[in-house]
Length: 82
Image 1 (cartoon, rainbow, N blue to C red):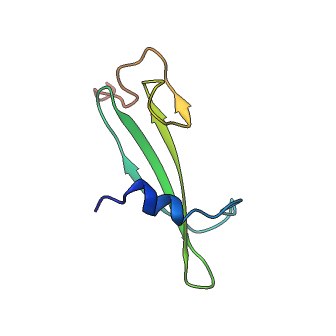
Image 2: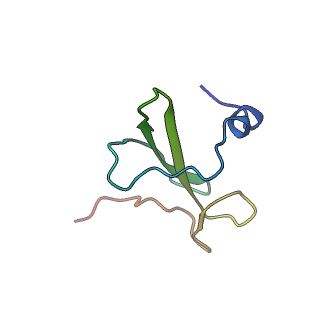
């Protein structure tokens, strides 16, 4: 399911921090060529809400990202190590 930016932004919590020792679920969305890759983590809080944070990797500067891999075509390994 795609979440519109306006909905996602409305759910933002200023200063959100997930403790380093928290139990989390991970989500990954990778791309092999000229796109973004994201790693997201989520923690169920004591009040039943779920806190989510993410890191977006991009090979294109004009695309919103946290980490830029300039000059790369992909940030995923495209072949298996031998």
